[in-house]
Every structure is written in structure tokens, then in C-alpha cells.
Length: 272
Image (cartoon, rainbow, N blue to C red):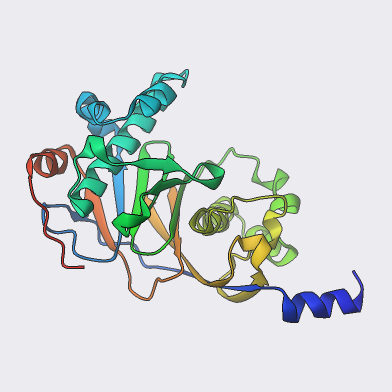
């Protein structure tokens, strides 16, 4: 690339500004009807607790979602998808007043679930191992969770996925897996928020602590984006991204009891 091209890209192409940091472990709260009062919330679901809830969760899925669930070969994958999508529908119903089965969820670029813009809400979902993570916000949002697997060949992905400085950060400790997943979830959450997907050059997506300027084409959208890491539980790393993380989200744990309470409620009063 010539000097002229570099100067042109720097000053004339849309830029994205990315802020990355880590949060202290969240204070996960139980959910109650009427408690959803903020413009940004993150929910976690422990899948083994919801086996007996699966028929009810599946009853809210659309025919397309049921068909998609049936295409998974493993029963665990069918359970994971059905539980995640059923809970998403119930939560959206709590925010919008719709019945769970009537919530309209479309699939946008890179398989990102999207709500009708008239609702004023954005959603994102991620799942790994025994956990599902759901984000709901007034602004575009992306969430990602990954199980930290000691046997995963992370070193094979470093050259193609991370910049030299990111690779140095990962490999400078004796147990690099946790740092690998910390940065990986940041990249995933960010491009899920923008709808971009990792694309052809994931190394161009900044994820180290601090402030970064990046090409909007690499991120997916121009503007300011904030990415925050947090521990979901034990050996799970997670991140949330949005163009507005001025306030820390509310963090909720979803249980079978909370499912029954939300499903039984007929009205939801939100202050936002």
C-alpha cells in the first residue's frame, strides 16, 4: 500500500473507535416479573437445570425454529438451541408485552437474531457447553461465551486471528488459554454487535485493553464501540459489546422458577 493510500484511508474512510476492558465478576441476580427496568441486561441460563422445562420452552418456538432444532444430530445441541430460543422469546415478551409465541425474530447478516425495529429493542445470544448467554438492550448488542478448554489447539489460530501484539499478550504467560478466550470472546461480541461476523481478517479487530482506532470495514460499522469481558462461571469466559456501555448492565441468572413466574405473569411494567 502506498503512502497516499495509507493517508487516504486514515483521513477519509469511516473509522471505528473501540474501547476494551474487563469488569469485576458480575453480581448475578434472580429475575422477577417487573424487575426488568434497565436499558441493558445480560442473562445466563445453566442448561442442565432446564431439562424438565424443555417442553414448555419448545412450545413457544416457531415452525422454522423447531425445524432448525431438529436438524441438530446430537440431543444436547437440540436442547441447547431450543432452550436458548425459548428463553429469548420469553424475555422479549417481558420487554414488549407480546406473547412468547408471537415474538417475531428474523435472522440478519451472519445469523444474528433481530427483532422488529418497532419494538425498540436489540438482542443477541451465545451458548457454549452448559451455558447460554442472552443480551437485551436499547442499542445494538453482541454477547459471546466460550468454555475454556485446556486441550483446544489455540496456538494454531494465533497467526490468522490475532495481531502480533495480541499474540504476545496471549503467549507471555505460562497458561495462555484463559487469555486466548478472553480476547476471542471480545472479538466475537464486537462483530456480533455490528452484524459483521469475524470476516476475512479477524486480526484487524482490536481486543486488547485500552482505546483503539480501526477501520470501519473491519469492525462492521463506524462509531464508538465498547467491549467488556467478565467471567460467566468457573471455566467460562464471556464478553458483551455495544455502542453504549456507559452503564454496567444488570446481570440475571435464569432458573426454572423464574421461567414459571415470567410465563405466568400477564403484564410487565418497565420504567425505560
